[in-house]
Length: 101
Image 1: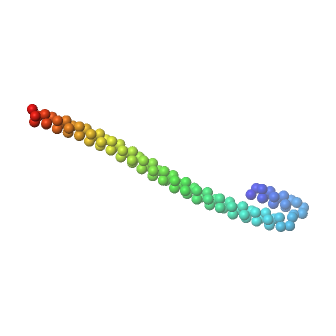
Image 2: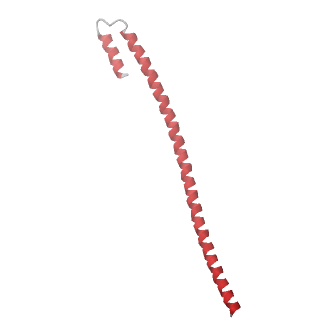
Image 3: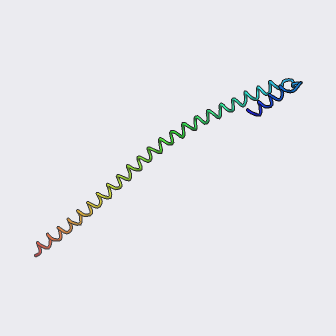
């Protein structure tokens, strides 16, 4: 935009402006404005996508925490069950010894 404005200023300062030069510059400005608007729309869309990604990352982080908590609970349950099975086997052994004795 700056270059186009400089060209426009230079052409106005010349004693004999070239025919059609100002309209060409105006067309270029309009074209550049259209490109700028497209880029702004793209930036807004990318901002929305970025925001959605951040929200999804928070959901994933929460799910990861939930999974870790469940894994911890499963390990605790496994340990309790292993201890109970061991104790039950020991009790069966002692009952078996008592019957044989």
